[in-house]
View 1 (cartoon, rainbow, N blue to C red):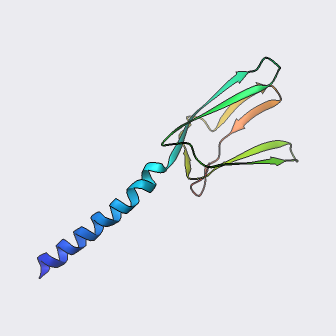
View 2: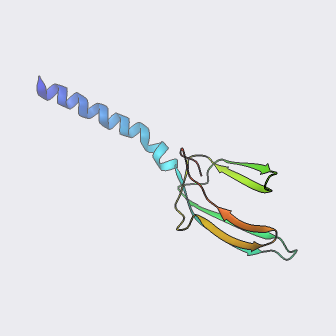
Length: 102
């Protein structure tokens, strides 16, 4: 009887892992931000991810003026939390992670 209970528990654990694998594989990690100046004086930010590109929402905030990008189901894998840009009207990029979002 104990072997049957142990086997059932093991099968349930394997089934749970099988169901979670797609969600774990789909989780994105922000690994790098590349900054390039454009010919018209602007700036181009290239966000690099592993594990796929996450859902992105952007918000324009007024005080202080800034743009916030909300990356769902994303972890920050950046070496530094802040990146100084100093061109094209962009002073810096700050990555903050919390509740599975970056």
